[in-house]
Structure formats: structure tokens, C-alpha cells
Image (cartoon, rainbow, N blue to C red; front, side, top):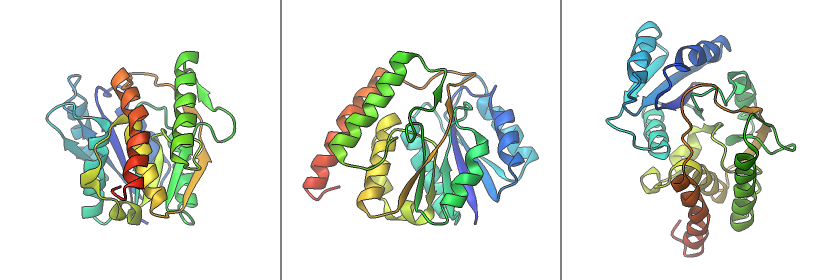
Length: 237
């Protein structure tokens, strides 16, 4: 097993050193790719310092804030070119607990895509305002009803893929970002018949940095589910 944890960053310099310390404390066969979108707070420079002191840390610099979806696509391509057998998506803000990484890899032994779920057994979210919780939970119910995917948390961003899943996806046709990106990737993997498993995670709202949530991201996700269904019906997914 050779795993890569992809961590997109934008203004995360406060979180990055401690996050990487905790990731590597798990003593797993993995490396980290930080994809920084030219953060004005100097996150890219911090990432370079971390990479200079640890050969398991890699950094990709992008010229501007280009979006979460395109960052993950760039990371997927990086992983496929370098023969990683498992690929994680993970946030830099500690909402995704590194303690869960071993469980993802265990579950991946008998699954193709493992999704960390905030809604598998009730609601396991800490410190979110009620309005945002309702929005997120409602978005997942809405998306699940329209797409038919048997996943409780379609919009979550803590997950692990076998490389075969990413190889089977046409990454050049992935256009969505944010919540919409997560829904699109899950849907395409499911429609290709890959084994998807959810595991419960405790999601804790970010402790530092700035949220990536925006009205545009919410609207994109609302339209994405219909786009996926229409393209699927037309055989053009």
C-alpha cells in the first residue's frame, strides 16, 4: 500500500504544521501532497519548509485561488502519475481528524471508495451553527433523493479512493467545485459499479483560517445533481 493524502490549502498556515505532525504520528505508509492556491498568508512558504524537512511531504503551487474541485483533480493526476495505490481527500482545518486515517485504510481492503460520513448514525457534527447544519443535512437529503445514491453524506470531503476508481473516471470532464465536486465524484464512482462504504467520522468546525463556503458553491451543488441525472439518462455521463 502506497497512499497519498491530498490537502488543498488557502490561508492555512496556522493549521498546517500541527496537522502534518498528527498525520505522520499515525505511522502509516503514506505521503502528503499540499496544493496551495497562492495563499496571501504565506501558507505556500510554510508548506515548502515542511517539505524541505520531510521527504514524504510534497507541494504543488498554483498561481491563484482556482477552487477545491480543480485542486483535487490536479492531486488525483499527480497520484496516478506516481503509482500511489490509495488516495485521500482531506481538509487542512482539523475538521477531518487524522485519527481516522487508519480506519479508512482498513476499510479500503474490501471497498473501492471509503467515505467519511457526518450523517451515518445520526448527526456527528460539532460547533456548526444550526443554520449551516440544516443546510448541509438538507442538501444531502435533496441530493440523495434526486440521484438515488445510497450514501448518507454525499457532500463530505474526507474520503479515500483505490487508484482504480480514479483511473476509471474521466477527470478532464469534471467541472464542479465544492459540494458539487464531491457529489459528482461519488455519483460517477457509484454508476461505474465501484464498492462504496461509509464510515462514521466526528466532524469539528474549523479552529483557524477561513471557511470556503459560499452561496455560489451551494447553488452549484443544487444544480449539479440535476445535471448528473440528465447526463446519465442521455448516456453522456
